[in-house]
Length: 89
Image 1 (cartoon, rainbow, N blue to C red):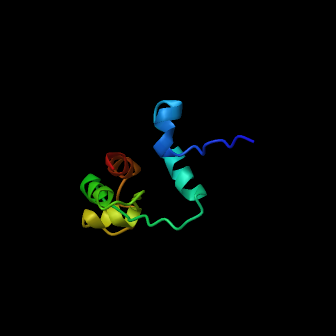
Image 2 (image 1 turned 60 degrees about the vertical axis):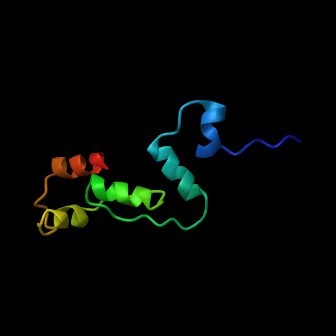
Image 3 (image 1 turned 120 degrees about the vertical axis):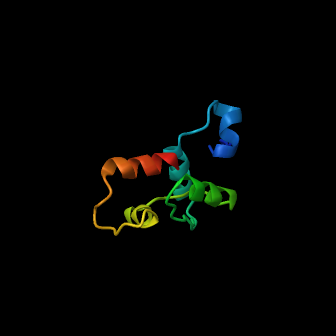
């Protein structure tokens, strides 16, 4: 029987064209069945540093983003500001 090649990000482009979305990449990491270290970032610079350090993923939290602006995590940052910070990552 012929075995199918597993669809991974590494062989995706050669076989299937454009790279998968970030959601698909995260799903692939989670389906791998191994522990993933995902550091929290507060802006694009910290996300870039995490990427250069070799981590596979990054996340942002309300506390992390508000603390970086010198604000308590009490809902003082609007949803627009949160989305803007997360999009820059």
